[in-house]
Amino acid sequence: MLSADSLTPSRTTPVALTLRLCLHALLAGLLALAAARAVADGGPRGGAVVGVALVMGAVYAAGTLSPAVARSQRAAAVWLAALGVCWAVLLVLSPDGLWTAFPLYFLQLHLLPLRWALPAVALTAAAAIASFLLHGSPISPGSFIGPLLGAAMAVATVLGYEALYRESERRRELIDELMATRAELAAAERTAGTLAERERLAREIHDTLAQGLSSIQLLLRAAQRALPAGSPAAPHIEQARVAAQDNLAEARRFVRALSPPDLEHGSLAGALERLSASAPPGAEDAASTEVQVKFSVSGTPAELPTPYEVALLRTAQSALANTFQHAGAGRAEITLSFMDTSVSLDVVDDGRGFDPASAPRETGDDGGFGLPAMRARARSLGGTLSVESAPGQGTAVAVTLPLPTAATP
Picture 1: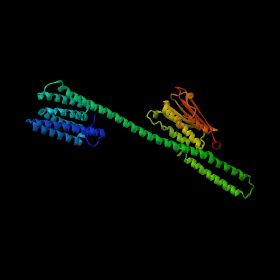
Picture 2: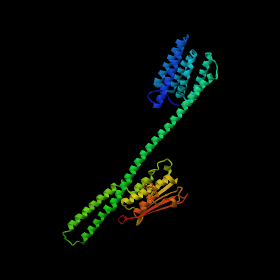
Picture 3: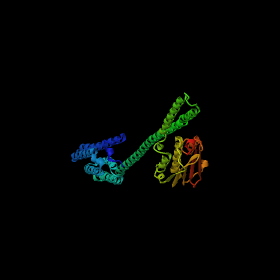
Picture 4: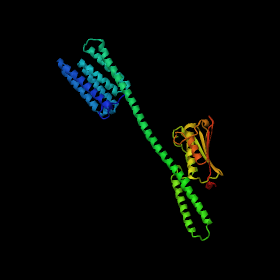
């Protein structure tokens, strides 16, 4: 049911404000009508009717302005009881007092829980019907139908308004949730775009500038060895070689600075070990955190170029995210293997598996995640990606990259 806040000026929507003002005007008008008719009739109870109508109006005004009525259900019940007593006295003094039952219906339905409001409305309707008998009015079907129909209309109106209000609140909450989700998605896309651009720049610097400077350094070394002893060109070649070496070191620093945050504070093995100890991005739900992930390294670790480390780390993140989100697995294992001429990464889980033949083999609209992106990463470095899986038999994802000559132990 609506709270008493709808009757106070501090917390009202335009619709609630209009309803509140209409309720005030209805009660004030009906009390004025009862008082005016009593005075016009010139009966001995005219003064008493006017006095009771004024008292009831004052009690009503005090309740609508009282913060206690808005905050406390008990205070609201006491206020309604006081109004009920005034109304009962008015019913005894004047038959016109029964018309004020209609606004009382709304007050009871607004302020009381439904299990109390319905009996209160029924009691009010019964008192209105009894007033016909008390004042000797002619008994007719309208004497019973009028108060009962008014009560039914009040109940239907309040319950209908309640349903519309709840639906409006649900829609508002949904809109707020959608707005928050859109903001989070935009932030995630910005972050993903920033990281992707950093990786691309690191890869481009490594594959072009760093490799070119390394080649220049090797050529200058060869030129130094080919020069005769005491050649006047030897100091200049040495200066050029040192400059190329310094610039190569600077380029490598740029590559390291542009590498993913997971690789900034440690090796690839350390990043993979941290990944295995926590849920990957996109798998933060409670069910996914039940997967037990184990990490191991085989072979003699070798220093890898940053693009290799980025590719292997991203492949592990994507494969493990698929395990957490889709496989329904209980265990998963990440293995980083260093061999004589290659390095490989295996991600194996005991989940529900799938048919690899049905998986897309080209990059789709997923923005760079999933098997197509893993395969594209491996292919860009001259490596291969293989997927072994079957329904009910788990999944094994393996990526193999050829070791650069300088990285071979």
